[in-house]
Length: 179
Image (cartoon, rainbow, N blue to C red; front, side, top):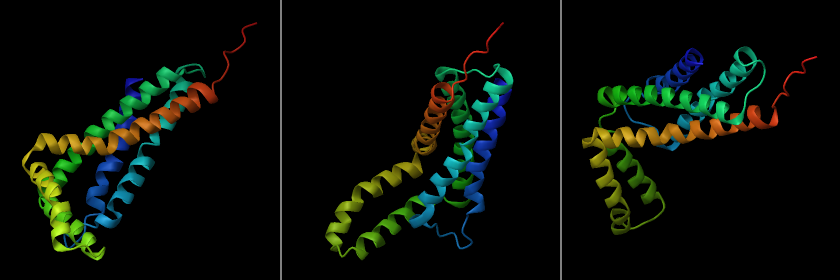
């Protein structure tokens, strides 16, 4: 199981992590309006490897039978491996290409709030907490690691749960009859 989890976890992590570099804008200005959509869609596609890993483990290594717990654990391990790679890729990307991420994000939010017709006082009130958080984000690697992990881990947990339900409960193969 270790080899299977490592292979599928690394594949998922590299797919997720490579998207930072593939979608890097030439002018350095990030597209926050579609960035989350692209990011979570990429994570969902990459972490769909969990389905393939669980099915392969069930069919190839476990005589066609797998329970909910084992299915979920395979998904969890893949999620953790993919998450570590994702975090590492983000740190590399952040350090080399996006050290102004917080400033760009605050500027984006400010322009979004301005298009809603808010006064400058209302905009400043709404942005004060965001500015503080982005300053902490920029200055604390630990906070950055925590927030980055909170992007990918919930997606992986959801896909792990779904795959465990699919293979461990709904598509559960019956024990082979021994005659």
